[in-house]
Amino acid sequence: MSRPAKHTIKQLRWIALGGVLTYYTEVVHHLRALIDSRDGLEASWPWSRIGGWASAALGGMTVVLFLYLLLLPKLLGRGVEYSPTQYRNNDRMKVVIPVLTATIFFGWSTLVTSLYLFSPLGFILSVLASSGLYILSFGVIGVLPFVSS
Image (cartoon, rainbow, N blue to C red; front, top):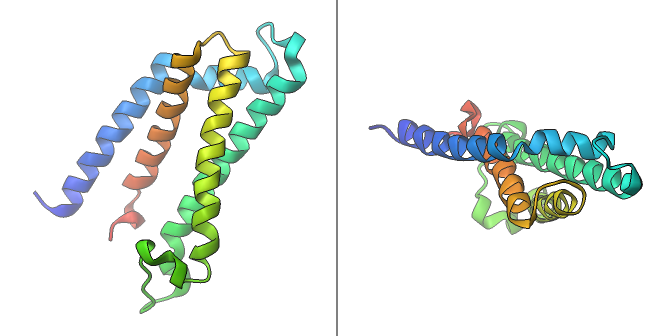
């Protein structure tokens, strides 16, 4: 089996796992309820709405930064190589990598906290729901054709 085929199969496993967790926990429905402040959340409206929007914004920023990093070789032009492990040697990457790490951490944490406090999910299901959504997102980004090295 070729290297791209193995990579695709590996990414499809992450997509399947994230998809099952996302579907089982109905995280998209609960996140939408937080943002819209429906389903009896009016008593905690400002905080649930702020938490929902913050986690969605940080998640979106994570996706945008990942796509930027994956498109960076095309943006820099032919013949320009960079190594993700040696990111401190590249002026662009030494800013983007720490920001990406922070958006992943704070976005996931905000989503777990918001789901735990303002949705009917308990703590364990909030962790599974948040992890499933992030796993699904990373799996989809990893299977995009320009990602192959």
